[in-house]
Image (spheres, one colour):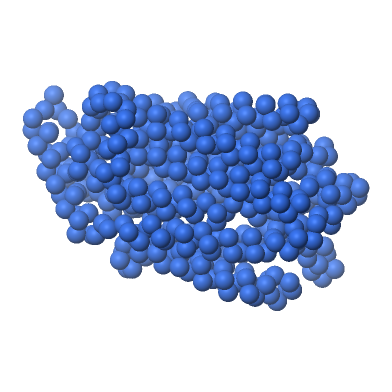
Length: 488
């Protein structure tokens, strides 16, 4: 029986065609459109549309995500253990699941018009179903990056284009404040004055977001089915589940990378919308611009330059010594720029322009962090195979999911506690919140992410994986795979 050799000359000449990268990048754009909608807006939807107390929302979403996180290693192990034909390890989870996930995503943004307790029960049921199916898709979707090529530089190129797709998906979600701001500006005067977001227009608007960005985004994610698994030697040993988990604890690089991402939870715990909605109002040439619209323009202006640099992420990384150095520089730059921006303030048009310029500089390296993290995760999976003889795309990426969900859980709980302690109540409107709430928003918005960057760097600096070691791992794996081919 002839087994295709992923290290053949043909593979060396061009592992991943551009059309395949485009399909994969499009899939990630769609998936992250749906995911960003949930992570960025579900907290606000629950507090301001459904009317649930922020402390309850924090603990409700937080503990739900903790439970969700715990099932991810099980999902990853099931994927790794499932016996499949060569090149078909992850594809079964990429074709049909997006339709189910898309419907559940849209349902999360439906106001069923019931009481607070019933609304919480409905939300829990929908969210758990959403997350369980999403876990299979997410592990497979990101796991493809480790299987798409046996070459680290090719995986870095793939990571670059995937994160461009991620950026496009998140960029689409950045339109929400603009659309929301336009609707609010034309809303009924009573609703606009009290900022009660339970009016029919805003409720229908969020349902629209759920259908277009949630369901539509997931349909786009099905393009990932067009990718190919070029690392065909995926071992499926029947060892106990606990042994799969224990094996990961010998992969120091993976653990440190996941720990760094986890401790950064505080950086984005408080959604931007609370600062912009309640603390920002602009008057330009006599035209009033509300906070939601201002948030959109702020996001666009600080990211316009950095979006271009994502196309050159691999070249930039090569120039500065690798993906690890990319992350270190980015986190240091984010910390310094945010401290500078904090002292500039956001109290006048001139200071706003200065802050936007500073944060635009910061976003150039920070936009490359996602690319670097995924490239390093793939290196860690290669390292695991080199050390143990088993590839763990499933369980390793599920641990990434577990980390992200535990991180999201802490973000939700932290946000709920902070907003409740500041006396936030959506029913009080824009101008009716306690004074301490307004005073806290600028430092929360600008300095919390700086603290997150510092916390991230503490474990990350202990990662030791040189370029020479990476080349050694790839060389020995190539020899090992060639020997396996001869035996077959």
